[in-house]
Amino acid sequence: MNMQDFMALGDDRIFLYFTTFLLCLARIIGFFVQAPIFGSNHINHQVLVGLSAVITIVIYPFIPIPQQLPGGPVTFFLLVVSQIAVGLVIGFVAFIPMAMAQFGGETMDVQTGLSSAATYDPSSKGTINLIRRLVFYMAMIAYLMMNGHHVLIKAVVKSFDIVPLTGVRFSDTLVTELIRLTGQVLYVGVQIALPVVAALFMIQIALGIMAKVAPQMNVFMLSFPLNILVGLSIMTSSMPIFYQRLKPLFEQNFNDIITALQQIIPLAL
Image (cartoon, rainbow, N blue to C red; front, side, top):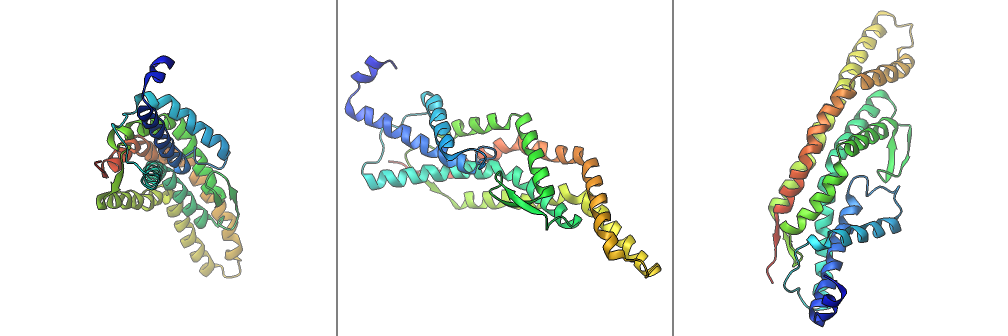
């Protein structure tokens, strides 16, 4: 549409296009708040809002324009809130594979005794431990190598075809789906940490036997460096397993987002 065609539109159509743009922007901002990589505190909030506006401008020609939108400032405000909530759902589901990696790293931190060495990490917006940070960054690198950020943008664009901008209602099946996906964090996280946990379990059994055989040895002080050495060694050697476990989850993540969006019920005008 050129400028002459735009000026030829009536005031109602111009207002409809403008409000549609605002609703699209609200959904994308909500998505960026929770999405992996984009939702990191490494990115300034002003930059994030500007990036959301740029992406909205780029994808706007491909977004279905509704015939009309609910009138009234209160109704429009609720509509904006609902679009932000839809974006948060997309970002939450997209972040679940990263949460799996973080939980696996946290489990390894506890078992190796590094849970007390915690520092602030802007990527996860909180205080995390060393192995958890390392595993999370490796998962982020793998995610970027698999073009996961492109898949996220594709999922956001697809969401406008599945969930229109005319209002939504969150069903019970959506809550059930989110609970199911969240439950996988524990299951996959334990699988990621299992080689380290199993090796350290064997080490603890060996140290317990040694404490009985040679009680004059200070087994307690010996266990700290030994746990760290064995834990880091096993973690390094099991990195291919870690990548192979997360790769199908990254590939499945787009389908999980679409499945979650299909549980959102559009409201008819």
